Amino acid sequence: MAAKKIRFWRNPWTIGVGSILIASIITSGFKAVVSQVSPLAALKWFGHGIVAILMFGIPIYVVLLVVLLVIIALDVATRPLQTPVAVSQPDYLSYTTTTYKRWTLRWGYRERLDPRRYEIRDVRPVCSCDCELGPYHSLPIPALECPRCGKRYPVFSPEDADNAAKVIEHDIRHETYKTRPETLKGLVA
Image (cartoon, rainbow, N blue to C red; front, side, top):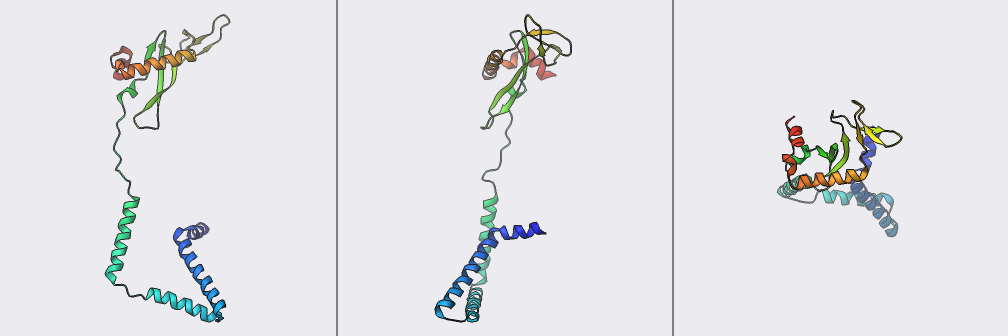
């Protein structure tokens, strides 16, 4: 109940009408003081002013026309400017696996701010058994190891990830990913 009261007092219509009423009362009081009229006479003057505004002779068709125009204006203002068009996603978004040098890679896409624009993210090596690789800490040479089957692979550096992303972008731009065997295998499955 208290929330409804707070919402009522914060409503723009309440604030607008209340401001007008308060300003009118203050003006009436000021005029009463300047004219040396009693406060009761000032309230009567204020009341007569409101009655005069409400009793002003306006034809009913003008009132109905104004109400209709307000309803139409509110409807137009709240309607979206354009109906949203269903945007189909590019077919390359299903291209998420490829081979690069000695690794099988997997990645995802992140949508950019402009529509239908995506960027490659999280390029990572996976094992031939389709499990992501983790670090293998051996003393002479660091490597990657499959936690599932134990197979070892060379380290995949950030430079390798950047270069792989460039190759993936090239394949997408030139649509060569559609003819790569690993892509066809991923699209059929």
